[in-house]
Length: 139
Image (tube, rainbow, N blue to C red; front, side, top):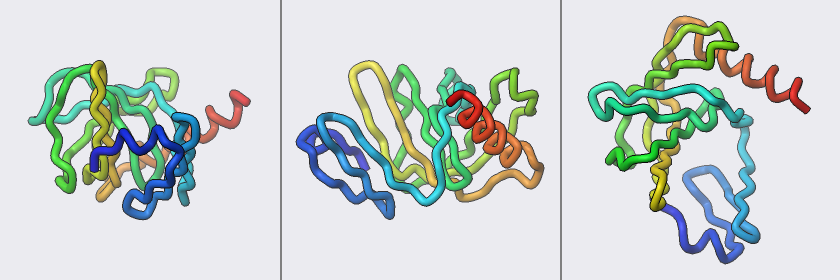
């Protein structure tokens, strides 16, 4: 789902189980699981060879951002390779996520994913725990 214009008018927009309330061009999300901001790199093997950034991550979803058009399709499951920042001391890992929304602007391409499968190794969960620790220690 591509969203945009209505978000600027202060409307409540339901997005597949996520209720987003907009006010003065700011979006507030009410989620069951907290999304943590991250500075990790993300790759979409076999789809896009350039760099994308993992903007946020939770145990149920994530969002990525790129400076070029990627051409993802809503409802399709993609493999996302996550390369955590070096300070986390966590190895890269892959997750599988279904595209739930896409937001295209002049200078950025963003997509939100619902995680459908995480790796059997513990890197994914360790990284979410690391982001939770980091966000609590910054405040």
